[in-house]
Length: 151
Image (cartoon, rainbow, N blue to C red):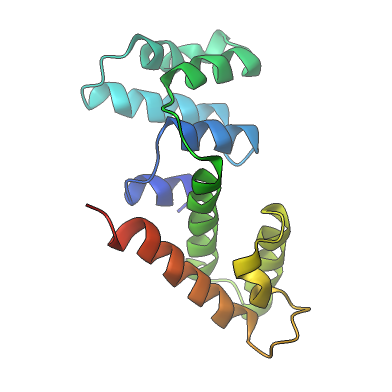
């Protein structure tokens, strides 16, 4: 499953998440169109979502502009942490070797600008914690934050 698929399956995807994912190149235009179509099929009646769903003709900048009109005021740090959770879950669920998982984990650590709570995930960490164990701990804390403490 893709990171976007993880976010959708947990109910964490929203237009702010889509906006950030596209700007960071974590999702493609087709992912956005598909997300918009699902929203419409589920009863969304927003004109902006309809424009997005049929927005193949829009430039990337125009597409982001329409998406931004559909977004609520959100905290970018929260959206980044949702994506981080999705990527970590994908690494954990992959059938890759531990070496490949650790390599991918290092990429995620760098891509997200070295978050403090992932310091033990680094292969250069001096704390003696296995990076995959540290990844599981970070994933667990993010899961608790986003999924277990919902109203």
